[in-house]
Image 1 (cartoon, one colour):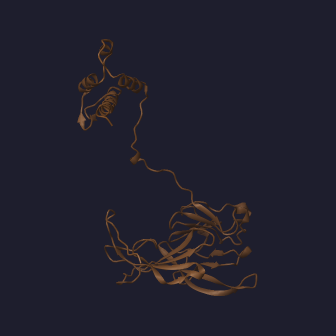
Image 2 (spheres, rainbow, N blue to C red):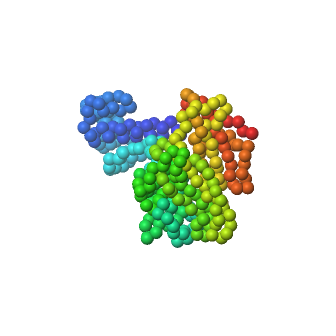
Length: 316
């Protein structure tokens, strides 16, 4: 860019700032480029920068392009200039919705029990919702991503939605009561049925307590998995002991991953446990259930770092 044109741009910018001073009553706190001006100083600055009508009529050599730009500025309404870098994204991405069976609500079976889970919300990464079954009598399964809708059971990064209010469920006793059961293939068209029996206390976690055989309607053998409630462990992690266990299940014909993150112990001071299986400190386990699409990762305590400090990971 030529120096002359650069000076024109700078003049236009100063002219814009000067015009803004005349459109409002200036107080002692008004400033331009960090310098304070009173009314008289602002008027002097405006007279020095804006060519007067007398100078135009007297034949003074003034750049016509600058005059045209000034006229356009004078006709423009008051505007607010917003820096692009300061804008916040307010667009909320809708969660991906998948169906346990089929591709629409019409393909889903009807929930067979009032305590059956109708939707599962996964908040581990980008939120996604798996529709399990349709509520009976034309009722709608909650679509909220929040847990305060009165129909939600929370377990770590998952939410289980019920057709009935969850307050009707009793509170589970630690280690004794079964909070929910999962029966793959036990529903219509070999769908998975998850049924709630009681609510875990706030701050507790669910763990697999047992599994037992049962016969499917088709006559094939299968398992029912039972979960119980446990308070979160307050034990400190020992050196080289994993603090969290990740079970990653790749969903069939879908890019989604169903991840269960189970806390094992608490990291010592100035250390943190990986929140995701892709974070630094998370290592793949020697066990891979590739035949079932399952992978196991163990998270280990890592030192807390500043956000601007680079993190290096070892790639095998």
